[in-house]
Length: 450
Image (cartoon, rainbow, N blue to C red; front, top):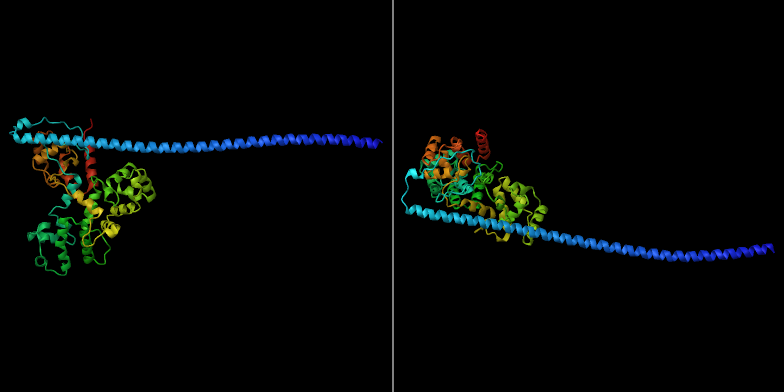
């Protein structure tokens, strides 16, 4: 009986505990479902928050892009406005000069006493690149690089003829063949009379001289390069390639610190593209030579949709050829780039040929003397009035003669750098820019300090 009672009590207690456990399990299951629901809701909220954040970031990026584009457009508009204002200023200045020029022609010349200006004290020598406005009615000098081209490519410069040595030039001048025009008209038989030595002067070499003179006068650079390279191969068939004389001329021009728009000699770079490159730190050929296609495409993309279609992959290679003075190779490269548009019999000029043709043309016969240390617009005008209008003339002038010219123009005392003006002009003509800088720096250190 006792055992049965114990079993009964155990069964009742076990059932009660089991029912409680089952109830607790149901409660826990309900709580777990609620927790899962809350977790799911939290995850959904987190997902919505992330999507909202991504949308906000995209909207912010779009806004920044819009702001960047608007800033670029605003900058372009400001630059255009400045250019228009500058053009207006130049136009008004030209108009005033024209009026005063006509007035000066209609009036009798005034006495020297009336035109003599009070001497101006010079506290510092002018910087090399100072550009002051020309006096009304004064003579406007040519751009510096155009003057350089004219100085190195003038009609008497027979030394640009490949294969023509110094003794050859003297023999030609002794026969009254003193310039390119005379050499261009010289026949082969006439040249053979002057140079009877067939071992030194082959027929092919003599025939090339008038051809080169004609091409130089016509500025047909591409054909001239081809002829001069052929002459070098004829003279030294086993020698390694070296630059031709016209290639050396191009290298002298590019080395000049006054050469503008250097990047535009590269095929594919227009003035607007060059402006974009300038704004992004690519201002010299050496900068372009170091750049790669990815960087250049990124820069072009910043300029707008129309510049994205350009292919800048060959620009660094073209810049390297120019820096190395391999103008013939650059010309050949640009001709090949023309592809089917290139006509061997009637070739269109390449970008390189158009570039040098543009800087070669200048209607102004006077050189810019303001790149000479110590020369300002007033002094320049006084030299022009005295008939000294080119660097060649200035290089051959004596300092005392220059002092007299300035004194006659009422410019006293003369700048302390005056004795170096002929030397500076000679260095400019020779393209010795480093020596010119050294000379200028010595003069600047000697200048009195206020």
